[in-house]
Image (cartoon, rainbow, N blue to C red; front, side, top):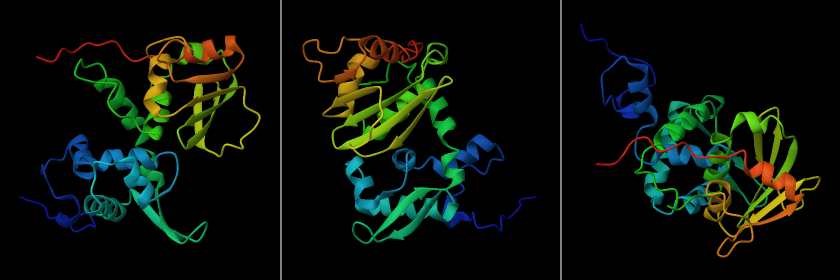
Length: 234
């Protein structure tokens, strides 16, 4: 007997792609549509305006972004509210349920980067870089560090706090103080050579700059590594 779902999650919202009771399959009905996960990712460190989301995802059209945000709002993943400062606008943010996707995305990231088909040199957004650091953090060396780190990524600024083997990151302004290390680069990809390629800061072609104790900078960078490649692309 075929059961009919009378909840808010009707066909108009989630499409019923699989008609399968598997939770993982249903998760793909909710967030598996093209552009859904990158939109969620860009909201993971705080609410953003429509224009800011679209600027971070230049490959998405205004129409598709509107559709994804509206759909995820109906699903309870995204919420929006009106703000007045600095100018009137709609601010999109993740609900508590939406924020719970971060560990899911982290596991997907660790799993997928083991493929030789993953190209870390493709464009990376500032938020994606910050989430990558939270994902690729090596817990053992991280437990030995307690520090506050300012990340300047183009026009975006984030403050990280390393403690108890965890790295918490929030958006902030350039006026942030009381940091132990300050990193600065014109774009997110400029961080990769040092953090994942272990190229010394200041070496030819390395655009990343750092300020703070040399020993602390080296110990902090040593806390990050991509998984070893396991799967070859045929």
